[in-house]
Amino acid sequence: MPDGIIACVDPLLSFARSHEAATISLIRRMVECESPSDDPAAVNRFVDLVADTVSAYAKVKTRPGGKFGKLLFCEMTLPGRKKNGQILVLGHSDTVWPMGTLRTMPFRAANGRLWGPGVLDMKAGIAFFLSAVQGLRELDIAVPSKVLLQVNPDEEVGSEASRQSTEENAKVSKAVLVLEPGTGIAGKLKTARKGVGDFTVTVKGRASHAGVDFESGASAVLELARQIDRIAGFTRWKKGITVNPGVISGGTRSNVVAAEATAEVDIRVLKLRDVPGLERKFCTLKPFDRRCTIEVSGGLNRPPMERSAGIVKLFRTAQAMGRELGVEVEESLTGGGSDGNFTAALGVPTLDGLGAVGEGAHALNESILMDRIADRTALLAKLLTVG
Ligand SMILES: [Zn+2]
Image 1 (tube, rainbow, N blue to C red):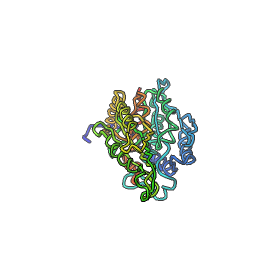
Image 2 (image 1 turned 45 degrees about the horizontal axis):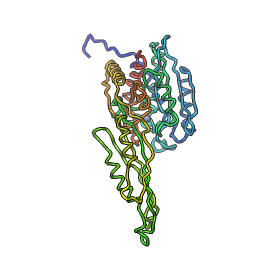
Image 3 (image 1 turned 180 degrees about the vertical axis):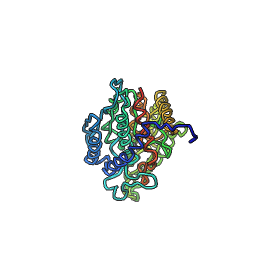
Image 4 (image 1 turned 180 degrees about the horizontal axis):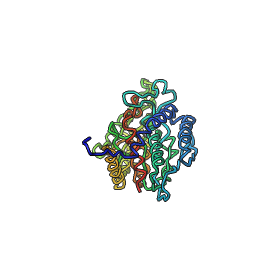
């Protein structure tokens, strides 16, 4: 640095740096508390860990999540007397990793990264947020809004139990910050997400003996195979519409003309307005073989998070704050859904991907970059100070 220039490190960034060891040890405890979506007792243990950690500086409530773990709500106690409106911070307690994954994928720090099941998606994000809150408290920086952290137990499996709470809390918030990981190794924020849906296409044919009575059979497998080619053709890549027949099943034995066959199809859309047309295409599928029938069920599960003016404004704010922290904050569009899809679809400005920077979400190389812990934590803290 040239002589005469005094390095002016943002106080929230210095706090995050000095607090890094504590953040890493919290991440370790979180990762070592496994919490697969389909194991409510395990998810509840993780929720209790978070609740115990924040109880000194938040009002904590939980709500049952039906067949899933419980939902966690923490109203943070932050400096500043006048509170105007609310910022909702969204996280999830569940991971895609089954119990026992730690045996083959233990938590570890190596090569400048932290590794382990759920570290990126999204346990580190929750730890960063808690560290951000501690920074604001310690430095006595006024936060003009109420800040509510909501942690959902079922995000990885569609959020059916938590969606209503997410939407209710979003409706009374001026902004939503989502602690999902950033995109790619640069940790780009997410300003648009595709909507996600699924369809089940069931073909019913007519069974017969493949040797004795071949001609009286109407093969559901053959009919479905033809339909799949048609369905895959619904993809409009340039418009951001993808249609993926991902699972097929059908038939009983090779010497029987199949009576039934089913395909499960994943759809992604960039614009909500493209959904009715796509649904119509599914619902008007006609059999090639008139002796077969086609039944279609399903539809859109998460609406797209469309890049609205409110989202762009929030992103620009984050970008300016990033510059103060010495990092280039970029934006991205992703095909993956999150609970941010629900809140953005309600018109509430939503900024997603604010959690950890790393790679390998849902994969064996799941890891976060240690040298991005401090700036992400500081960015979260600064975003909470927006009026
Ligand atoms: Zn996630």
